[in-house]
Image 1: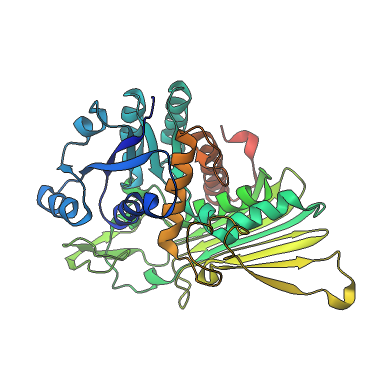
Image 2 (image 1 turned 90 degrees about the horizontal axis):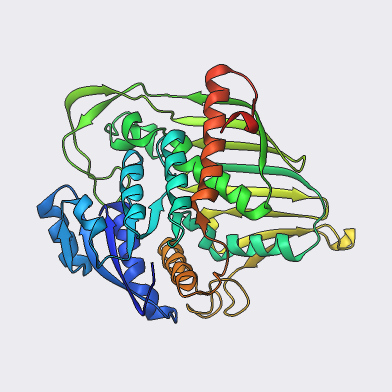
Length: 398
């Protein structure tokens, strides 16, 4: 649909991601120069009183409990879906069919079938854009890694070594929130965290998966107390449990091995039970002539090993990716060595979206539904490999 100098946004969901996305819409044109200005028009949630309070606090013009009417309203230009994964398909497809641009939280969907329908709907809606919020692409250090791989001749890729380690779920006292519900989430740590590191591996290297050679999926805590109150600011903080217990039907941890189309080999690990790790989203890629390493708990730094230097001076170099006008996503922010944080990834992502809608190039590519569907296929291949204790060729996952 045509976009003028403003874009009315309808956002569905107002918890964790709702706060992150609201902050992005509020701040993007305060820091970045944009041709199109987002208007926080309507926020949608199931609890009318709570979503009304959220709208007032964050500056949304309207609140609603009727997502179907909200996403098809004629004055809405962009629909932002930040709900549990099993709701993504109905909401995004309705928005696309109504001619709206769409931003959907990751993973693309709870199931591969839903993801496929979303991808197909986006392909049919040729006049609008449909993106998935892989916001870590907008960490300056990760965007820099993307640029280094394309700007330097690093030679053949040998290894991808990725892990996303959290520890918040390791206590049996954490209630059965929706992230442990297979119907709502589709999977556990695998879809929630694995989607990020699969996307990051594909994004940085430009390589694609040929085969998942084996996988392990494990659930450590089989039952949790059913919650009686909703979450606060964190993933599970503020949730209160009742006396009844419910079964955990998703994975707590998944590990898998893979071969890439280039011939490189890869390892992936996701878990919510790595006690002592808060949000350790990390990757290392090894090429013939160099290596790159990143850890989100050290998010402003990228580590680079240049194997073309004389052996006497070779070693890991810490690059603080914060120099305005030199490193990606820095020129709108602060002086050198004044770090960015988690919230900036969403603001930077919103900036790139607005650039594309204005007919300009993003700083680095956004993940559209086709792109995110490829990540969903890898997630599915790992599930199949774990369930059947076998290797799975990507050509088998349609």
